[in-house]
Image 1 (tube, rainbow, N blue to C red):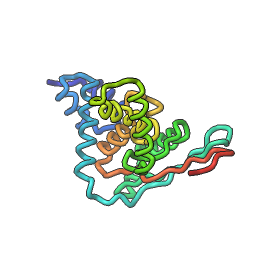
Image 2: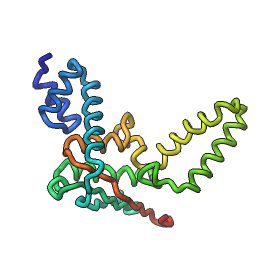
Image 3: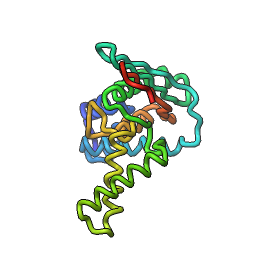
Image 4: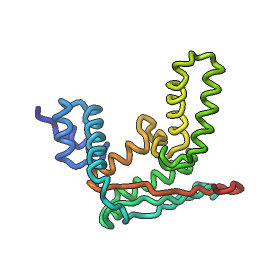
Length: 200
């Protein structure tokens, strides 16, 4: 099907993807804007998977100090080339991530970063809670796994709902950037300072 330049422009503004990628996504989605966004996200996941073995040793350290000077954040985001590190899209992403860390106080970047003892402790608490609710024994483990996802979405940066659009996660935002740039991009680490609080 043919798609209108206005729709292509609208999708491009929304996702930052290239003109041809937006056109192809809209054609594949029969003009459905939401479906086209989902197609571009999937494309970002595919690009990320293909580039998994590439080294991401360029990038930037972004800083953010919240109004009132009570909270400060540093985030390191890596990519494959200095060229991508200087693009407005990359800079915008790093800025958004620093604000996310300031607002939602994640403790780790990914679920894989959660220490084993921390995870075991959380699993134990959730198991006891689920059993106390009188759930049948055969579904306790399933319920606990579901509640662990909620734990990850609260404390793991990439699993958190994006503060500017809670219909997507920071991982979705990262996938969109990967699709735009065509490079491996990694949120390496962050530190959040708050006046009067101890830094972990």
